[in-house]
Length: 504
Image (cartoon, rainbow, N blue to C red; front, side, top):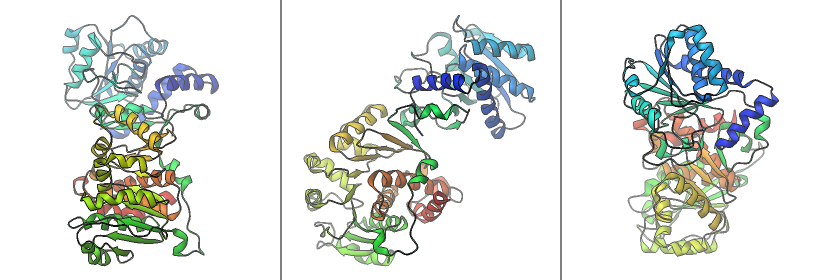
């Protein structure tokens, strides 16, 4: 799905109102009802709420939600923050409806003293409806005081659509005052700002609620940003033919492993074969031959002449896809073969881990990087490859420029891994969890992408499917394995189930 900017989202609302058609106030009611359904499903029946409303449409959403909660018997107190003389029409109508239902539930907050009088037990839920995506400057005055009160309360905080004070599609300053939500219920699509680590303190978790905005509108919009879901991945999948053989599904070459790091080669190799490659050869340091042949008998092994490191590459003619890097180390002899690999590799190529570290140490080799190479750095590896970045927004901009300059794919690994395409499009992955923050996860991803490339997927498809299924397998592991205990090998073991789910 596309990720739209704030102006496009506003236009989407207007388009829906005009073309469904539906009135603005009824669309607001629909949004509040979507929030209500989610809240009721996830809170105890005796929960009580303090809803903080600004005077715009986000405040109108909060007032409509308050009325719906009251009708269902919940204890609700609404605090209208008198921060402006301006009131949206939706706010006015919903305030009147709420007062007609239960006037004593509504209090107007005019100053800091009145904020301090607000009392709610620690088990109570704060709902933030102060400001929506229309915010265009840092919060100050009464709004800032309210936000600080919410943030220091210790209560569970649900923000509606976006945490108040957070910009939807651009970077805040470090000193900006922003609601630190516990969860955010956002409408229709995630906001770009939700997907960066620097904003995780404000949006540690979000849920996307469908409020029925017009699907026809999206077909008219252009955006370089996408949020990848199962519906995006399923149409890309290829089915294995009944009358086929191993040669039809490609021969992958994995150059991986050195003394003390053969495990990286094992993980990548297993993930490769679990991802559909017909054949796999692992070229590794001589010391790793017995380990590989014992731990993954389905793979063939090519032994380097060097006992402990990789110092050569085999002939590439017979392979459909190549990956270089997991566990290879950064010895001079290993780094030296990168230029040779770049010169002779016409196949789909993946560079990861120590491959990236070697490239960072000799950046002149970037000039020889084969077009459409897939690089899979985490944040630190990307900064070493380019420069230090002060923010995730800046890093993403840099990744886009890097991808365009070298005509390569950059898979920037994070909670919402970013697949940066050389055509300028950027895809944020929606699967995965913090259990992947552990050694071996990157090796596994490299193996998956290599297997998909050998299998016959093109580079954009292999990148998108590989990142998605890697995260999906990790998510499926959590049904039986605690997030702290998740291992890369657990993820590999779950790949069959993950692919099965995608093929449903």
